[in-house]
Length: 289
Image (cartoon, rainbow, N blue to C red):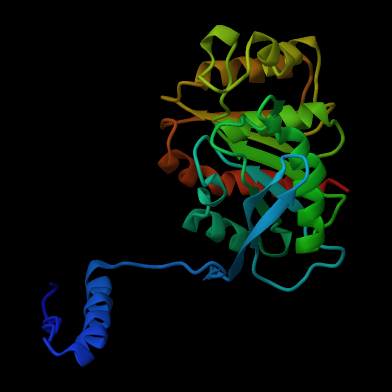
């Protein structure tokens, strides 16, 4: 208990007073330990956080999604839309709601996009496969829903993601050239051979070959001049493959920015650089649409 804080009240045996005393104890414990709760529609750096369900006909289920509306007045024509895909694991749609994200959006002011975080299951890797049409779900359901729900500008849409989501963003931008103003792969989960892929990432060698981003880049610029961002930490296991993709794209004349910074494949690395990610998308939106 910090110095100067009054002691917690003792619970009384009388039944009529037990619940109020318990509430008081929990409140004081929360204050003493520094607990902080975020509501489902909280206000962080002036932003609004929305949680909702998206009924997918393609996947035959309702999936959770989260959206962030930056602070500030409405923008004529609507703010741009950033679709941000999460990494491997459950409940990923909330995994990137960090203080650094909200601070970065507030700093951008009127240039800040609205951001939608769909749920891609634990290990869909965001592509159409045996478990469902996860890629089509993003393009044909998530994006139209976000544009309607958030009042976003349909001409200015970018896609990015972390790890599994970085692969998914790069793959979807490749399959839908001209749909996005920019694409970002942040510590993108990439492999050079089907035999090296993580369990569950692909349905087999044929599925991997259909979504082999490095092989596609060696054949030509699959993004057709759309700005591409790639980054990885010095200790990231995907650094080598990400470096190969960046090199293949550059040799084909693609507009790619590639960064290697200290760190590993971990949340602290992404939090340190989310402001740079947002700056990249904002610059692309300025030139797009």
